[in-house]
Length: 87
Image (cartoon, rainbow, N blue to C red; front, side):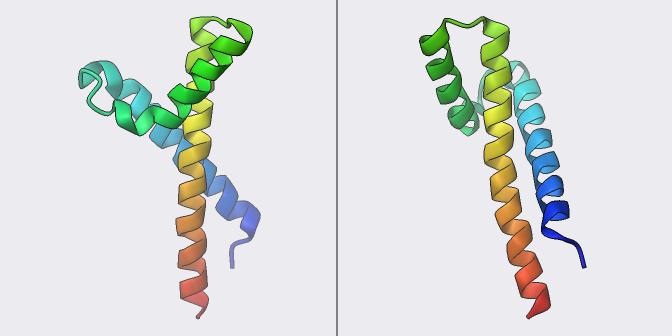
């Protein structure tokens, strides 16, 4: 039986992987998947507006927020599978 910490670590790894794939695919697909990155882009714009940060810091902020967003979704799905498997 896996613990909640294990599920959280796996979910965050999945979120980081999804965020990385989206970041890499943007220039290759002519920004076709931009709508999948709105949580991170919104956070980056607020970050830039608040502190006037660099572009690199904004991209890093966008990547982290997207990784957390997709990691949370993966955690919910993994938790639901755990509950269904135990029932």
